[in-house]
Length: 90
Image (cartoon, rainbow, N blue to C red; front, side, top):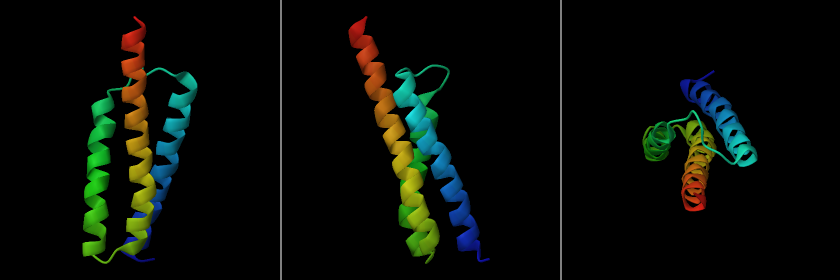
């Protein structure tokens, strides 16, 4: 297995977990016990990887990184939206 394929496998496992977090947040409708800037940081890192992987010709990692980055960004947007709605409800 090439390093690109191994890295892509990690990205895909991470994307499954990230999207699972998104689904759970949609169910719970509340951000509790989580410091959302952590996921925001990893979203930015994911965006960097989307530029970096093609520069290294690591296309498997790039495509897997799209799924992971999208999950992180979706979670952050939903978390911020829920926090704002909760603030408006109080």
